[in-house]
Image 1 (cartoon, one colour):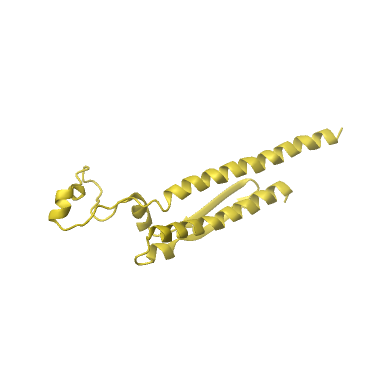
Image 2 (cartoon, rainbow, N blue to C red; image 1 turned 90 degrees about the horizontal axis):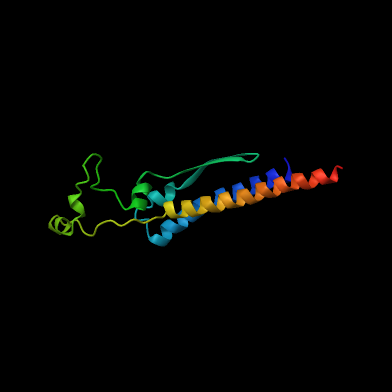
Length: 140
């Protein structure tokens, strides 16, 4: 393993380990842990770094996507967009309480973190590429 691929491996591992901590912290900060199921389901599911290629997998219960988007109970597939339960009068009449609001514990941090990962990988790979050309001059 070259120094460049070692740097990529180390950064990828650090990024990967940090993602589950970020998501758990956001869930706790936002108060999304009534039952604890979502919080306890957030986990790492596998990292593979081969040279400059990386694949990472994470897992959490499906409910987490609904929390992130502010959807869930009452939303059904194929209802044609007629979501009466979102109306204030309907909610009041049926004692449904306040409408759900998005709590972006996953999507916002994912978008930011993957951008940071891409930027850092570009820098690491770019440095390695420049190093190759520096070594070409030394071989004359």
